[in-house]
Image (cartoon, rainbow over all chains, first blue to last red; front, side, top):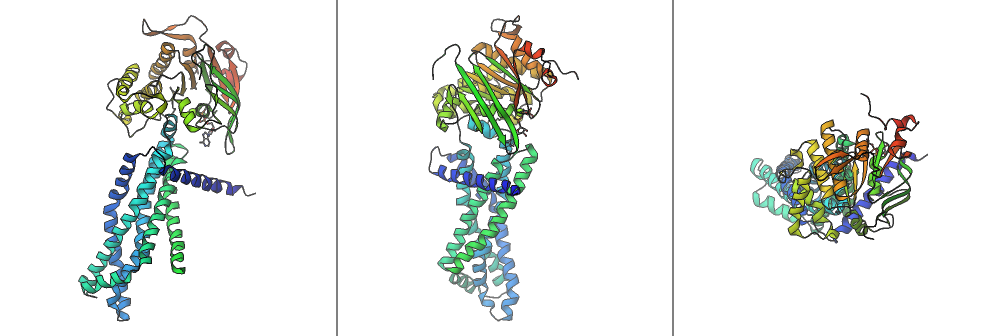
Length: 252
Length: 273
Ligand SMILES: Nc1ncnc2c1ncn2[C@@H]1O[C@H](COP(=O)(O)OP(=O)(O)OP(=O)(O)O)[C@@H](O)[C@H]1O
Ligand SMILES: [Mg+2]
């Protein structure tokens, strides 16, 4: 009767199994340092131009949209304040995570997926290497360190964008006022929230991507399916989880 | 593990059943392979040949039954112990399984470097890799990557990687699939050469009648460096035909050729095209 639930439940089960093994492996040798640094380069350095550009324009567009509303209340001096809070608490982490999910969850899933269908994963195990240790753990570690860094960069670029629109283009505030109100707006809990989110998202993106790749079946078509699935599932989780993390911070 | 004794069983499957959800990929399969023996596994597409190979390696855990490698039950063995057992086996995967991010040299050297139990000194790796690649006549491709080679060459690199550890048991999963007849014969000649120069127990999955026929009737002569008719001498070759996961035939070449079963007899003569 509940047969239709079998598939999803099975895949949730394998997901948590893989996650558990990937995390346990962090504390076990061998450590593939080369793979970790390669993945950091792909995820961190590779996503940088994208993050710089989108961060800048996100800040700019928030400022643009807010300027009218703030003017109505004669509170245009508060623009730095608003940009800082929306970016650091919410938009920075979420947009960065969504972009990285689109770029890297797909990359991870298709790379591991094509290794799966060409039996490279089987070959690895047959030749004495744990594929979780060699493939999943390095991607997990690289993502968990690079996504928070990318988020901080994105937040900063957003503030720069806000500054350009708010102080230079629209003359809503003086530069000093913009930066000091932005600085004063942020509390420790905002920073905490702004760093916990990308860390959690990183785990989700890396593990969902790896899980989709490791469970690819059905040849090259299967790789395509796995890639799409990785992006969709990780993006949805990012949006859902940001709600719960925000809820936690609002409540406490 | 006991050292070379003539009739030692290297691989034994004992009533093995493997399921993937609703599909029964292997259904109550039992077989054993001893030192010096060759086992030819034939069957239609999807009959379970690949699953059988991977189960034999301990890559797939059977849902029922047991797999014994060199006398050790793979179901209860720990991963480190399994790796030690696998270091005495070589496998050629159907899809190749070559690491496409590595050079041919790194690919062939991979088992030597990564299998701790082989204790291969780092200084010796290159010489062994060169030797294995020379064996498959690809000694000049060390610096290339797999995507630069043709399909037949990649199979040969796969064979080099399988034999580089000097295993006592070799598994070949559909080594001739998707190759033209001439290249396929080259590959089969290499398999026979490895078997007859080192006496490796060989399990071969194939859908080509000729492959099994060649292993059963030809022998590599190290002096003339070519295959020659073994003159009907018993080369200890056993034939198995799989149908939908079940063993539907098990016996000698003669028995295969005289089988009345219409499905089985399809694998006993060259397919007329
Ligand atoms: N990972 C898997 N998940 C689900 N089903 C699988 C999986 N691997 C194999 N199967 C199924 O098990 C059966 C046996 O497959 P297997 O690959 O062993 O066949 P085969 O004899 O090697 O076929 P071919 O000649 O095409 O290589 C098929 O029905 C296949 O669909
Ligand atoms: Mg197969």
